Structure formats: C-alpha cells, structure tokens
Image (cartoon, one colour):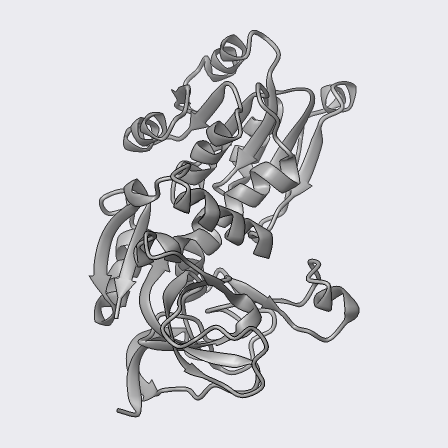
Length: 348
C-alpha cells in the first residue's frame, strides 16, 4: 500500500475534501506515525471557513488536524531519541521553525508552526512527525483521550498554570464552556481555584460546566449578571477571567467584573481588535490583560502524567467517534454545535 486517505484543505480554492494521497516518507529526524485518533477543533473549522489564515504555510494544500495520537510506524534516519516502532504517542500541536536560538531553546516566537495549518497534520491514516514533538503515552491512556491533550486540554492548562499562575482559593471565571472552556473549568478546579464560575449563554453548556466542577454557572445575558459574580466572590470580583470564546463582547464583560489586580486572560483567538472601554476603574483597580496562545511541550507531558495518575479523567470530553472519510460532517457538527460537542474524534 502506497496511498492513504487524508483530509486536505486547498488554500487557493478554500475547498476541503478527504482525498487519496501518497503515504509520506520520514526524513532525517522524523518518524511516520500510524494515526489512531484525531480531534476536531474549532481552529480547524476556522481554517476551513477562511477566518484563520496560515502565516507560514509551506504549500498551497495542507492536511488538517493538530490533535493527534497514534503509533510509531516507520523510523527515519538520524534519530536521537530511540523510540522503537510500536511506541504509543501523542503529538505536540506545533513545532518550532528551528531557525534561531530562541526556537532551539523552545521559547515562543513569531514563527511557531502549527500542525494542520502551517504544515501537514493528522486528519489522515499516517502523518510525519519530528521526533522532538512526540510524547509517549501509557497503555492505560486511550488514543482518543490522548489526542485531545495537545490542544483542547494543554491550551487551558498552560493558561491556568503558566500565563495566569492561578493559586488555590483564587476566584476564576471562564467564558465559553466549549471544547477548550470545559477543560479550563476542570483545570481551574484541579489547581484549587475557588470559586470557579462558568459563563455561557447555552443552558446545556452551563449544565456541563457544573458537571465538570464549576461552583456556579451563569447566563451572561442575565440582567443581574454582575451582581451574581459579586455575590459569588463575596464582593471582591474575579482574580482571573478566562475568555475561551474569542468574542469582543465577552472580553468587555469579563474585564468589568475583575477585582483588584485581576487579570483577563485571552485564551480564545479572534482576528477582531481587542477593545476595553472601561475607564478610570480599570486603572484604579490595577487590572491587566494577558495574551495566551496554545500549550507548551511541558504542559503536554505533565497532562499525560496527570491522566496516567488518575488526577484527570478525559473520558467525559469525548463526544463521538467519526470515520475519517466523514470529516466534513464532523466539521459541520462542530461549526453548528449539533449535539453541543466537546470533542469529536476522527478515526482512520
């Protein structure tokens, strides 16, 4: 067999289709992964609908998918880690360009390449991965749960632990309880935040947030919304507000209920401008706005250990399994919130 199925997005025509393409060959420092599971993320939807434009695309067609797990199938030359064929792995959602010292030290830079956007990802039967992006996973961790760690779980984990640095007993609000926000709620509770307040206009999402560990689940359209936040925080306001929706109105509302020294953490991405219309009180209360993007290599490894140790059960996050050939249907389900999915999983 020298060909495989892959979900391909054509940047010029803006068309997506599952196509038969050649199986790629592993080059120096690379391995070929047999894909077992691949998550469907809102970023994938945004790529396909044209609202997310690749900054560093290496070709005019890309295989979509940055949440991937599988098995090492074929080893390329000049490998250093020695992961044997058959090793179960999850793949980091991106890789450094490797052109400067900052990238070599794995610090964020302007040319952090994202799988499935800037280079071929894992909506396929096989995918090429650079060996330094592979994270071994234990036999006890199912492939579907492992696949979503590098973004749906790692992104809010890094936002909570690294960007915000949430400490026990600090109050947290999470706007948008979808694929990322639901995990933001769970992870805020995991590190001891109290109270954890989920905010979403959908009743089903609010109910899910409570099941995932939120202390309160509020409707942002409630006329007494600000009063509810003040009551839940004993009048102090929020220490941290996480925008997981990437919506300007969300950011305005979240900033308005921050307390003294509170921070708005921008987890959700949007091309629209950031505006904060609050006046003197923003200065007087010494509020902050912090940008956040994705996870880190350390966060993926730490989350694999946390799930293996039983601290985090990701089974409730898997909404459905869908054959790779039906990837377009999965995109439609997520885009239109059919069944209010947390994570849909493509299976080759």
